Length: 73
Image 1: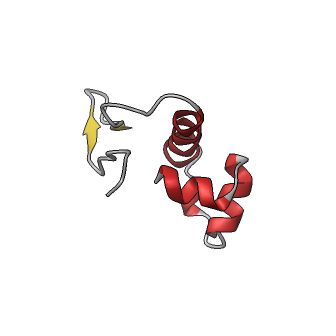
Image 2: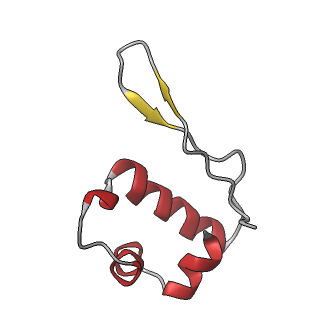
């Protein structure tokens, strides 16, 4: 089970722009930093739109090891 509760839901504000929802709690320490970076690149930069995105490429973008990505997710 994931330590990070991610919600796939988005909320829509009055200007009809989708705003991503964030988990209620992010772990402290290095794990929390990795989670925040992952959320930033997924929600703000939308790296998931890259058809060639792989776990190795995503870990390189975030700047951490694949194992840490897997643990954080």
